[in-house]
Length: 450
Image (tube, rainbow, N blue to C red):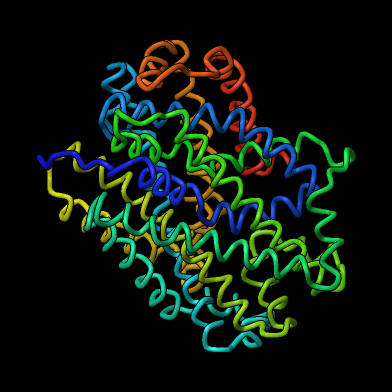
């Protein structure tokens, strides 16, 4: 079997892990959830949860990976033979997410190309997005471009592929995000959007806001997907897990914050202050924003920069999702990285094509009322993510005991939040994550409307 790779240093690890965390969850999902659930109040709740729940879960997963030096598929089994199946369950999450994530990445690639070629008016048409995703061939071309790019990075491995890509794209992501945010908030009419986004209103605080923000943590920070365990297994024993985790959290939360600062004030500024324009939900990026760019001076250029920004984030996340699967296959079947990567790529292409057809020629085919993509998204994000997160806390809190993880964390010095960590991982986190799981499932099957 190939010798396990490692990152060359903490900077490479932090940028790669941050690249995993920063993806469509930050730049696509976070802004529309913030818009839907009260702007400033959602932002405040999310930040509080990120520095509590998010911090504990991330530290735990990185520590498990570094302690075992294994992918999630085998890591849990090495900690407790009775709980080895949890590693398999955790690996299922990226397996389900990978194909449709790459399909959406293909959509982003298409929009970046459209904006770059000056066709912003075409993209702003109400029918453009629907006609594009329902066509048979066009979405598959861009999907294949995206998945091939992801595959090439994985083939090159941890040092030459993942780390080098992250060292280039993450700084570029910061520069583009800050630049676009500054541009947007200085536009006439944007101030009202800034106020809505930054100033919490106690009237907007509700169970819905809390559950939406807590659920968003899993998307934004790549938690309970096996990704942080995988990256943790490549992390040097000489570096501090606590410090690295904090840096990843700050990076991830900052990008999500700036994404909201780009999108929400932009919609206010270029829709005449119409809050209804924020209510388009998941289609905010592909339907509403092109209209915003079309109404701006130099909209094609700004739109191209924005979608390339999203493309950068999507690529770094798809790489981490694919790496979690590839690493598991290498550990389980003792085959080369190249063979494992090609197997995952072929699987991703087959299932991704099915997801794409689900919006077109197979649109009449549904699973429990879901399209193929929506079904994979529901199972992975509404069921498995909170389930794996909750069970990880149970394993650490009551099976192997927190000391097993604390000893790994404290290899590089005293852990400053030890008591808080133990209380959170044993009691607080599992209870609240269970609430997410129940509410997500009930909402998904139409019993609960939140």
